[in-house]
Image (cartoon, rainbow, N blue to C red; front, top):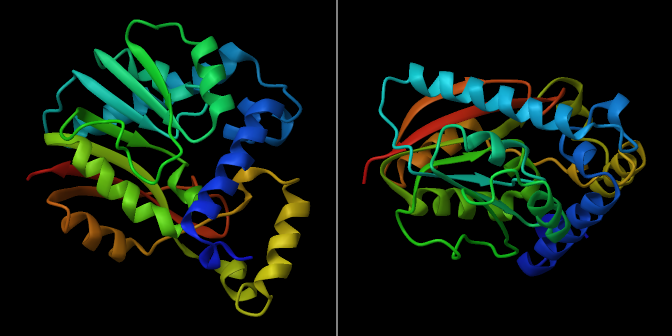
Length: 253
């Protein structure tokens, strides 16, 4: 059954199962799916080094926005084994990682080098009710929303803004439209056949299902949540065949 036709609870349950299985079989590769690293060939130090490099780039980007961001508490949404969560501890006093997969959270806690400042939470809800309003100075989500499905994306974006403190910053990545051959092929191949093809090609990888939202729709939605869209930058995080954007938004209300 297409995700769009499933009840939200059923879709979320299937999403949890896919990522939980991945967290038990090949967790690092499930997050960073480089072909040469499948089969548990990621080394732990090497894997976490990519997180440090990514967050350093994010902090440089924030510096270029010309705003001041508090450094008290940050949230990593879709944290997996904690690749980015641990890296954020170099820049924030306290960091929380959230993921839908219990196995990923279990691994993140096992690998946690900063247990006094870095905390992990399994969350299988459609909201972030485990956190109160205005809790975080910074919310970050990378290559996660593109897999949760359109039924949940706006809800999570709304929650990002709720848990942000006034003046806080949220940065997230989200695909836009399909482009090139993929956009043309999708018009003629039935959804069920495309799903079977992707299942075979990606070996049931939970990230095989991709979901986007047009850039202009994202900007309108975020502006309607009392946030100021500071920057929208294109990137290749969604892979070939998709537009992909990084959104940097500051809560003003």
